[in-house]
Length: 257
Ligand SMILES: Nc1ncnc2c1ncn2[C@@H]1O[C@H](COP(=O)(O)OP(=O)(O)OP(=O)(O)O)[C@@H](O)[C@H]1O
Ligand SMILES: [Mg+2]
Image 1 (cartoon, protein in one colour):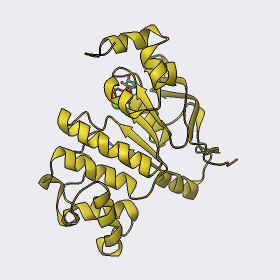
Image 2 (image 1 turned 90 degrees about the horizontal axis):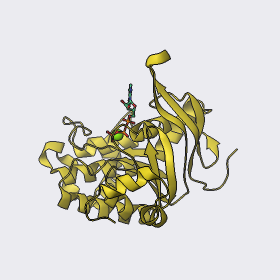
Image 3 (image 1 turned 180 degrees about the vertical axis):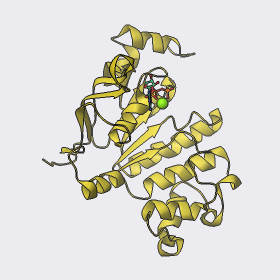
């Protein structure tokens, strides 16, 4: 079943690591909907299952129960080729721009590889690559340079360009600013905020930083020990949290209510 742009929907997702009595239930019956064009913030303490949810959506970790749908189409039922197409429509921006970029590849090669993993030829895609670099405010000459020649914030902008060059509908951002200095964090968030409007992105924005989540998200989902304890419009959840756990999270943020 495939419909209009319904966005990303996760229904009753359960993920376990290990077997038997020693198994960890990383996600327990989790449901999250990211309507097309919206940004949903995913918060929760370390170990609550945020990255596991991102990985389960992308098929990197196996799902024990539940399903993932994009615009109404169930992802787990897809064959190899359709799955490949799905993975182009959903891109992840990783946390650490120092380890996520291949140090032996030029920026141009990294972006060419995102467009065409098999041939990865810069020459065939030069105009597209230069446009992608301009979109994240990097000069065209960056195409021939290596990751070590860039600052952390610039590297994260390269990672954003790599995620967006395939023109995905959905972007999953997992702690994309936590490896950066505060001033650089703001710059990367401004850039992402602008691009998500321009490209009408559907975004799952994972962060343990509630102030950042409040800034970029329309809705928020609170995870605790692998379960959703609260979800709703950002304004509602942050001003009138329904669960004790959310209140505790908010109380821990300096300068917040
Ligand atoms: N590959 C794995 N094998 C076994 N256990 C795992 C694996 N990946 C995650 N876990 C466990 O699943 C739980 C959720 O981990 P996850 O990485 O999703 O948390 P998180 O919310 O992203 O935390 P953080 O904020 O520190 O990034 C944790 O108990 C973790 O130890
Ligand atoms: Mg994580």
